[in-house]
Image (cartoon, rainbow, N blue to C red):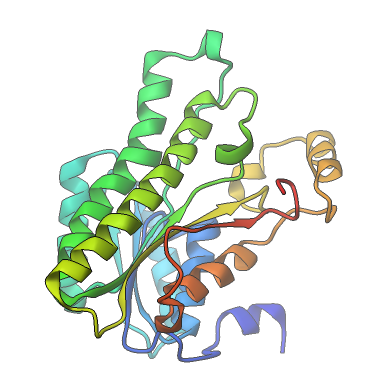
Length: 271
């Protein structure tokens, strides 16, 4: 069996009967997360921001690869609170429920602090941090009604280490870590207050990928990539599937005693 076949076949049932919504889910790490969720039996909804043709190509390929899993795509601007609430509502209407939210969508606008414009700052923080808040707020309300759910934030190693030219990105990604811990505490408190403590519970965790082989790195010169790899103890870039594997683990029913945690998938870049 080839690596591609392994990624596009049903491999388990950890998420059987669950519905997962993955923002930025039609490419890169998000697409790998969608496939990993489906491989474990979940019905999947993928969010995207603007490229209708690419989203449709992904939809067709996904449905070919996972004909037994429900799948839908949802277009919206993650930086817009109304779009965030609308897409959560759409997923619930289409699939009847929402069990797992993966806040993966993100953008960059790299410039040093002295050259960064107000719009560079605002837009990256709006999409990478505020959008995750709006989506989580809407999803949490639905999850609390049932007393169960999983929220996973896709942060970044840059949120832990900082990065030259990335004040906006690293600040937003670091903000996701604080959001994760606060949501984890509030969700647990609300479940306890509701008395719905005999179910799966609601957990909120974060994953911090390191440098990963996706479209985001396509424009980086080979010489720069070689320099990045030299800083990574394992000596290579990560694969999207390696991040996705951790996400589907955290989303599983059996991971109900893990909450408020940050999981690094970075080849040892930050340890």
